[in-house]
Image (cartoon, rainbow, N blue to C red; front, side, top):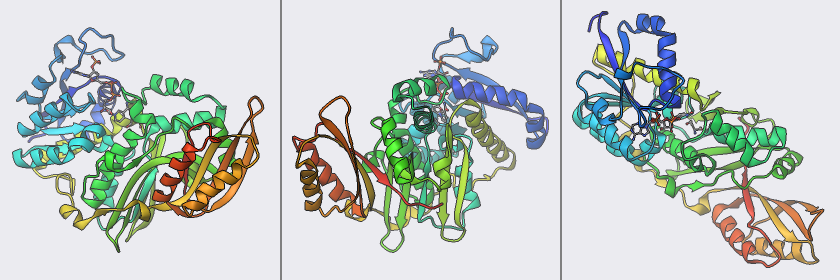
Length: 440
Ligand code: NAP
Ligand code: HSE
């Protein structure tokens, strides 16, 4: 390939991310082309609605409503799948890989559902699959894990992996705003998924956790096998309670491997994090990931986790790697298609081995004996109470009861919640949050 070569890029999807890629490729074209030693051109773009008005205007002849045509066009060297979803996106991705192309993807839902198939197809047909934008937006966490930290095994990776949820939680805490109005803002800012329940239900973070767990441990953990809890039931009062206890609240993904037993746990849940933990003060659309390696110790990565510009930055970094691959005939990625061998016998951690402290908020009838009944259920499951905050309602005959526990395990807590829900004096579904004492 000479310096006169032009690399043709096909975009499947021209929404928030696709238009960001166009904008920033145009803006920094001269620098990029000089660094990469080739010309870059967006050759064709597939969209669903050819008539839609878009912020970025492109020549009509570049647009098509047929993403498969872009994926299989012999003139296209790099296919960027930026549509989302798991049906058409899967077909387009596999078709491009079968044609031996390089696919760049931001689609964590697809990777988490079909990663094994995608990488097998790439291997079989000589295609390649890059996915930096799929986790933590503009933060180069994929590169960090597989290149910068290749010397390590990873006992713990945890952090904020969903920008929408972090934006919502921050605004709820800082402005005392209700959940629904802040969610509408996050959607307008281009942070949320087309189906926002993926964000607020914790599933998007679970998809990303699956990708990180695969990179770190070589196994695909399906989100259905994880503990996944969202932020929908958190109220402004929970932030006040958490602050009283010395904590902030973040939606965290937590990937823990015990190398002595080879047990792996991958979970996503709202978490009380000590106020002096750096990640507790990472706000708005920012993501933060703490990666502990057995060689390096703990490293921390922070940056914008969603939105047009941050995500375009990650997609363009993959395009640059793809160009290097096309020019040099070998990848700069150490393990893009070659995970560590078969997960090294990793097995899922049983619920009895997943433990920690818990925050439990109950709405109860404000009557004699209620606290004793709640305490008795907890005692039955050997869940020891560490503190109690009781706030009577000003308008009804109920009270909010916030209990924190000493170290307990998941199985015991799940049984406790089940029985508490059945008590007639508990009038609403209990809210359970984890308390983590991570200090970095
Ligand atoms: P988006 O704004 O909804 O854009 C989706 C694009 O795909 C639109 O241009 C749409 O066409 C096109 N499309 C959808 N279905 C199609 C079909 N059947 N045929 C042809 N084109 C089709 O989504 P986005 O926010 O850019 O996200 C794209 C991907 O990036 C998703 O996988 C998402 O999870 C991921 N991601 C997003 C962010 C973010 O901050 N937004 C960050 C990281 C990763 P029309 O424009 O005509 O509707
Ligand atoms: N909806 C996702 C988020 C986009 O809010 O984090 C980035 O992956």
